[in-house]
Image 1: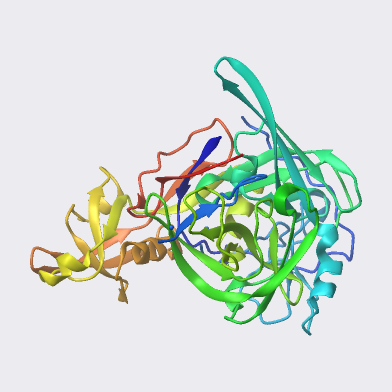
Image 2 (image 1 turned 45 degrees about the vertical axis):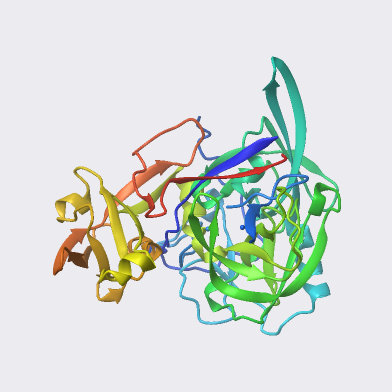
Length: 440
């Protein structure tokens, strides 16, 4: 028995506007250098490995793992390449491939992507009353580059001593944890293999309620490479987990069960639009019991993070330096406005230098209405590092305009490493502890 403790970020991440797409050689990807391996009444539970459900989150972003600066030629033999569909005009500057122009059947989506889906088995050793016990846990993942980078949920590999990746053709590989972002419940693995079949990345922002989706994964850790299908039930569903952590997820009625954690959610063009990670439950136990309510992390929210993990080994996020909460309806009855209520201000942070104080209520950010704490989280997450943001603040009956400069907060993506402290949470939804009980 173990608890899944996580931290939520709810940031949006944007791709670097300096990147310029190029067309890679057809089916000719090369091995990159290895990155440094350093050291719910209902309630929600996240998908566990084997028997339970554990969970993990936001933004508009994309990955560019092979770049070509204007006027220069890049040696693609030393970098990995992700593919994203160019079926519609893309807002993301990444490697583009010819995407599907017509919707596919579920059978076609499966046939096109089952080779890109993997099963993940971990070995977890724990000390129980002085005895060392080892248990196996299972989850899912999917291949993002042809030379062996794999994306999954962080809770799939959390606390593991060894990680094994199994492919559809029956082969298996020992995997190395390249890095992870616990706050967004994602992890990047690497296996030593070449000429794999990577997925094509779609645009989760273009999803509509009612659009068909399909998930491929390993439910229960036993029914390997299973397909489930359904529709998008809701977009940007604000889901509050235990610990008052809020995440914006894709809701779907496609069956998402334990063991599906970390698997891909595809649109009907065969493009990945999400990472399955949670299911709704009304049971008093940790096992989800309600059908047809599943969730997935929007792919656009995490791709910049994946890029940073692979290329840099760390994650860079816009930083303000406050904790916030919602203004309750009771307080609004006493005349306080809707907004993000400042609970604390980090000393010598952008917020403190900009004049924000504990008890302030932020009602607008750059003219955009802020109605809750999560709105401010998203506004900061969408801001560029170094940019100035105008905050409209209610303070003791007065309305103020404050200028703050968004700074960079760097956190390690590697185990056993620490960089800058994480002070923002939600209460600004960065770094707020949250947990799920369940079986591993």
